[in-house]
Image (cartoon, rainbow, N blue to C red; front, side, top):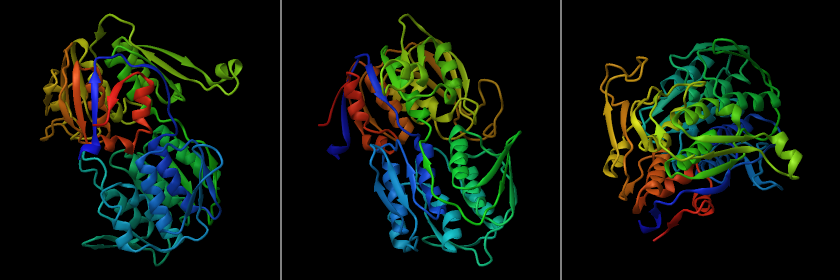
Length: 451
C-alpha cells in the first residue's frame, strides 16, 4: 500500500523541540478504569494515537459516552449507561489491541459478564494470558472458552484473593488492580509490577475511592469497596516516546528538546544515555514557571561530538532498563566505538528487528545465551535474546518493513541516521504509540515525505 510508506532522506541531524503527552501505557488503562466509576471521568493530556481510538471504540460499544473536553487533549468518559456489546462488534477490534482482556474485571462488576476476543498487539513474544484467566477465576469468575473467544460470568460476584505472579508482569498487575478494587474483601498481590505507569494507575483508582496499599518487596494490598466514582487526572508523560527521541538525537548527531519529559521516570535511561557519551539538560517545571508564563519543563538531549562509547546492558522490570527503550537505543549503539551487549530479559522475541539494521550496514549478532551478566528465564532455551553490537558502523539507506511498534521507530531512526533515501513500509503502525510523529519529524528538520 503506497499510502502506508514513508520516504526518508537520511543523513541530517535532528534539531529542535517536540512535546510528549500522557504515557500510552497508562492512558489506555486509565480509560478502562473509567468503566468502574458511577460518574464521568476526565483525563487530560491524552495523545492522539491509535490505541486511544481502539479503547474509545471498545468503551463506546459498551455504552460509555466518550467525548472531547474543553482543553486540547482532554477526554471525558461517562459510564452511566454501561451495557452489553455483541461478540461480533467486539471481534471487530480483535487483532488491533490487547486491551479487551483488561475490561473483564470492570465489566464483571458492572454487568456480571464479559467477553474476550482473540487478542492482538505487537508480535514480540507469546505474552500468554494464562495468569489473567487464572486470576479472574480466583476472584470468582467462570470462564467458558469458545472458538471466537472467552465468555466470562460472575454468578456469585467477585471476591478478594491471595495471588502471586510468577513474573512481575505489568498487564497481569493491571488486571488484578482493575478487578480487586470492587471485589468483596481484601486482595493481596505478591511479585507485582511497580512501573511508574502502575503507580499512576493506582493514583487514579485512589482518586475514584479505592483503598490500595503498596508495601515493600512488590506486595500490593487492595481493600475492595462497593462503589467507585469518576476521576480527574493528568497522566505521567510518555517515558518511552521521550527515550525514543533521545536515541534519535544520539543516532543522528543532533539535539532534541523533549518538552514534558520527566526525570523521575527516566533515571535509569538517563544514566545509560550519559554513559554512552550523550549529553542532557533537565529543565524542572518550577524553573520553567519562573521564566516564561505557561512554560513547561522537559529534557534536552544532544550528541556532543566525538565518539560514543559502547556499553553492556540488560533489560529488566522497573526500576531496571525498560524493554521498550532498547530498540531505539541499539540504533544509537551502532554508532558507538567498541562492542556493546544488549541482553533482553523481558520479551523473548524482541531482537528480530536487528536483521534490518544489519542490511543497512550495522554489525549485530544475536545469541541464545544470556550475555551481559545475569542468567534469565530465557536462558538455555531456543530464543535469540542477546545481541552483540560492533561499532561504529556507517549506515546506508534501505527498504524497511516495520514488524511492530517499537522496532518500527527504531527502523525509522536508522533511516534518519543513514546516508541516502530509505522507504519505510508499514509506517502507520507507529501511530499506535507516537502522536503526530511525522509532524514532529518535520519540526526537527527531518526530510521525510509520503509517496
